[in-house]
Image 1 (cartoon, rainbow, N blue to C red):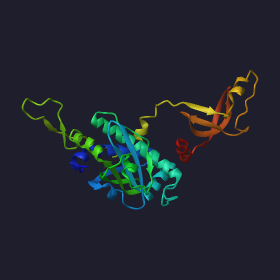
Image 2 (image 1 turned 30 degrees about the horizontal axis):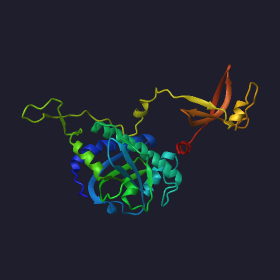
Image 3 (image 1 turned 60 degrees about the horizontal axis):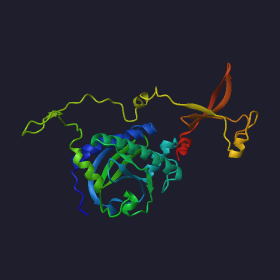
Image 4 (image 1 turned 180 degrees about the vertical axis):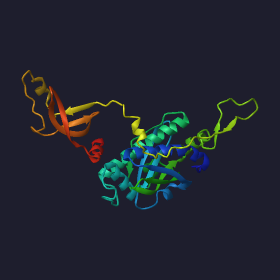
Length: 314
């Protein structure tokens, strides 16, 4: 297999904005400022790239718009802290040699959403729509390329070293690993992406000449960080369906057909138990039924924790 040919500047020009989307998505989910910046890009044999103890690896395979796959690697300690933050628990709680089942589920959901944000940005730059498989957690003992990228015979990978921080939680490095076919699909288009230095004019090139290149000046950047509430403000007028669930039960077809006016169906809740408040069919809170004038209402007594919400995603 031919060695990966990588122009670091071209690659970084394209991958940098996508990485910003990766950080933005994580910041929105954990409601903290998150930064992710490329500190270096190298090409290494796969065996060397996946060396090192105390690492947690997750991967997705691109299904359309981009070939290949992406593997994201954290130190296990930082992976635990990020997962704990998403679940609303103390970041330093339950730091072990490997993630618990709940932590793995939470981290998988974070990375799934973050890679989705990356894919949207990359797709916009490449002029296509990129989709990917659900995130898989890679066994720490895995050594074969198929375990990481779903393919055999991947000898070399591009190693993207990233300075990564989550406000008051994590400050260190994560790594993105990309196989040859993914790098090849990205780097030819990198020179077409926007960069802080120059922008290519939309005017056609003159016959026998070169395209016009113009300098660009940008406005002053806002001091608001990633994960700022301004992103949430954009969603405040979105309508959601709120329902109250009194209880549930299971009936056979025979029992359902036997129902008639006056039949009583016994539910799985006891009298006086809190009812469930559902937002878009997801459990959000619990409360007690009250009567307001002639209408029923619900007095909220409990907001469901982030842990329970993450568990509901599984």
